[in-house]
Image (spheres, one colour):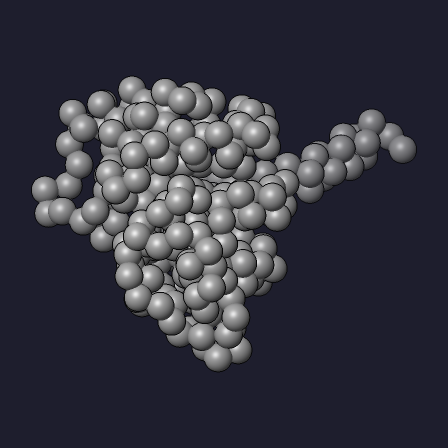
Length: 274
């Protein structure tokens, strides 16, 4: 092969190898990876905050599932969203007024579908033991003002299982109560924490973001507050954002397009169709 032909072949080979990268760059770089977070488990398909919903999230290959932790009358860390058991079980009363034994007797599945009859209210420890190493877990400390010491109990449960190690990368703790988030952060500074923000017309100021950045890794607002500008501002302060709660595909696509870091959804398949 003469030198001229060798040069032509070399150029052609290089163009084939470089083309995929050039096309990717022209399209704005590689696809943006978004954490797929199953809200209260895959709660669009199974009763929220139950093992069935967490199993479904794992089956659907979510990156994380989110859960809500409260405390029973006798100090057990139980997984349930509401202050009362009325909506999601066949019982009545406030979570904090019922013992773990009383909570455990309740049916936490039939309200969603008779096929889930017999699902029970799990403990945080049960969820950690069953799913650690298999899927990430986003822990929301729910109504901590009602449960003095709940942050310490959650920290103890994580530490006992070595889930507080920085290299783990599979545990995040968050709350709407920002004092509670600070308290947990002081107990286990190696575990990423997030501040939850309910919808408000005035948005989130740079002053607030600057204060959050002193202790938080995530700022997680209601999805209706989130636009491209807010995402950029959160990133500029060195934090990430996982808005909540997505219940339709169009909204999942919108949030992905503005480069959020994660999406909290009842339907994991809306974020990463399979």
